[in-house]
Length: 272
Image (cartoon, rainbow, N blue to C red; front, side, top):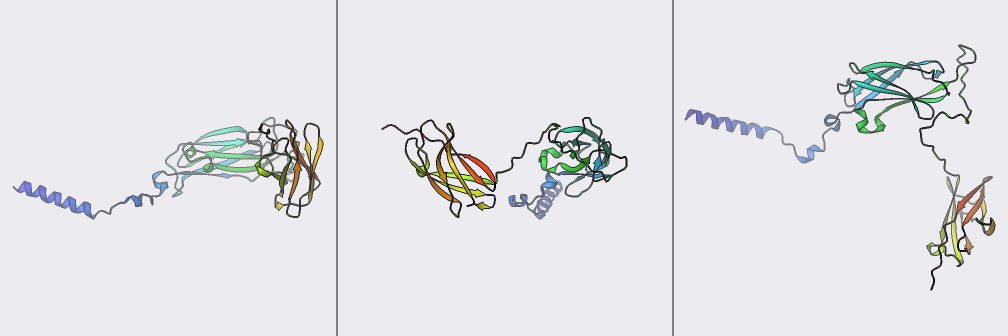
């Protein structure tokens, strides 16, 4: 009997203890710090200089820490550090052992052929790549040609020979035109063999422009078709009688330059 009573008291005590624990609702889960559930790492590299010359060494010391606390990371044991040339091509890579959240290394700028310009140093752990490229450490340095006179560090020449190819890995960034022209055919389409009024709008980088003029040209014969002269708000209208199988473009003069823009392709007229 006494044993039965003791077990019953123990169960009551356990139930009371559980009731005293704070309940965790589903809404509380949204307040969890994701850095506690999925801790992130950060890398910082300390360098010995802010610019370099051909033949120099880039010395660095790396610190790998946890994002929430900035304490030394226990997660990763290897750091990858890359040197990229001005075209974004990795020309050297270091694999370094992390000890107590730290490591160090260097790059020698002696690659042949060598091209002066802006070089990038990237550093990351494999664990960091789980969170995307945005968390990767990156630093860009100007790398100058070796001084014509040893020790003359006022000689800061960067090669400007655009004809030299050093292997471009970064996608080329296309600069937008200073002028854009949009066409709005009446009824939504240009129909071959039927005169069509076409509204147009000339837009510069800062909005509409009226200081432009142009013509519409048939591409196959390079023949003049219509004039284009916008009003003060950069808009205008012209009429085009498109021939079947022909294509047309606008030739616009603005700010001392000539731009060309293709007109929408004419559709074939439907037979009755």
